[in-house]
Image (cartoon, one colour):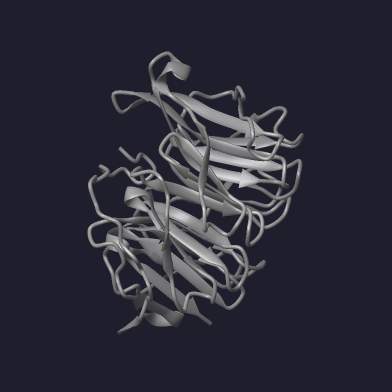
Length: 328
């Protein structure tokens, strides 16, 4: 089970080449364009751009696709796994990492070749199965991966590992919760946040040496965290929850949301403009720093799992190989 999205993984899809994503005739409000579907009956779970030209999207059955021209064309990259890819992160256009099931992969050539750098097995966790959900690096050497440890689809512990040698080795770190950890974000080398099940928010101010609990005020699962700087950040999750802090997470405030759908990703591109996506094709936008949120027409009922916004262009991916593109 892919717990991040709460759906059963499907197995056995053949390799597929995405040579070009062509815009469909359906044009959504505020610049969102629905593109040709990718892997039929296979979900896209994550998307990341290193700059305006170089980007990657990935999902079920180990699918990874790359663009070097800002999304005009895409080509599939080879990855030695049939597990779903849950997250991708690049330090620059060459050096990147991705997570698939209980494995960590690395590339230093923009993904032309992906190699496994670490695989954690049930024997490492007293017979329980580890799964990774989110990866972030604060430099070429220092990186973090989070997830959960489960027995028979029941989460029994949180999972946080780190590297200080560029992924050559990984060590487990103890944190003050056993809840499932789903997404993390750092604003600099020292300060980072993690969100997860049960309203969990964890915070570090010492480059991950210690992690402390911040009070979210909710018990809903929180799926995504995005910080603009060391003080202003956002968290989204179940039942339409949108949380905001302006003091680095010392206090979190619930913002008014026009939907009750589970929200899966949030990103602000500046102090005023932000987007949120979620289940059932939900897209929300704010132009006033998140004080108010307006629902946008996405022209889809597919779940939208991930979002990546640039200054003038953005992308969202989701169920059934769906890709949405935004242009200001």
